[in-house]
Image (cartoon, rainbow, N blue to C red; front, side):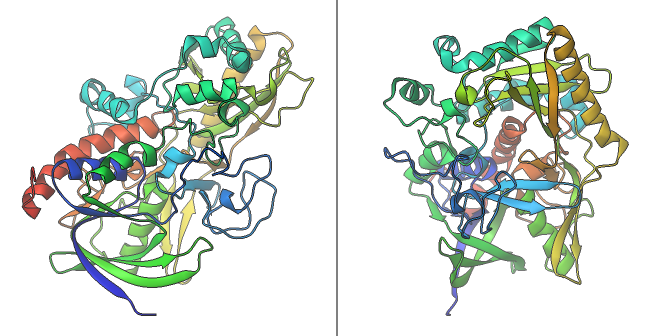
Length: 493
């Protein structure tokens, strides 16, 4: 199998929010780059069958695995949309596909409360700057908005309205959350001109109606339209090494079953790692452990946070099947005796009839207590999440306190279940201001950058991280793109 070797001015690894924003800003500055993505493209078609669903999941649900923690099914290995990484104390879920987490997330774009942001980032980022410039820029880039009134009032969102009403009775803060959703596509689901997906809660493995404003159809499409971004999908990075004044990225090309078709390398003067908290952190921890990048800061692999908790309550008025997604309502409990909490109503495809059940995704400020390490004996990267840490238990206590408030204010309701252990909201690993400067430039290595969710200081801001990841990425890109453009001699080209 003959290897190929190429050179490029800039290589970006990963096509999630950080990689997409960086690629777009480089292209707009006239800089050509190669964008590497391990997953496949997921083009939504009028047939409405691009993605698998929770109803009958198949190999499209999992990244080169025969199972998923989100399903009991067993299937053939395929380059599916979600990787499950088993750590000690938790399972990390990470998207695999052109567009990253934007393909599968609920699309919630939430700005943290000021004090929680400041508690999370300390002096590394200024909240006022983020609030006034970078959060608005992220919202503009992604294109997000709350549910329109007429849809919210429709029968499809009965459970969302019930959730909001019960929270208001409990004295909790209630708001419509901004979502990266095409509401016209949701209207199409409602009137039968598009396949039903979000309205039935079928969004765990992608949205077949095209209602998701995923990056492959928005920012990445804009970047590709400049003809300055060379996208390589189904290209899995196997190693990163310094090479002269730049870096050598080694990869293998695979087919949709994971079979290796070929190997190669790209040598770039500038390398941007945007493979997400799981991908980027593992890549760097391995490179430091094997001696490929021995001068990486000791903080690489630290400050991992996981704030997600699934809750189920019963005893409410009977709700519609599927319970109308995506999650439209955000409830905050800022007066919680343990820690502030945030909850989103969550569509539940298999909600049992006759019990008035509502599911919700909860989050609370998570201590950045998780870590990754390289195991030289096995050659593997291991992850640890300290489930018995009192700071971690406090998150569960806080969520139960909020649930108790809801139940007390709404007689006849009760908490049936709280589940933690598998999360797609795990972030951190290359903490901003410690492992790198506040623009994502890694300490110890020139022209090596990180722009993704690994920069966050765990999930300590207490809300789903997508908007903060995007805002931090926009800020980093604004600082590194002019430097890269000037160095490659193509600024404004």
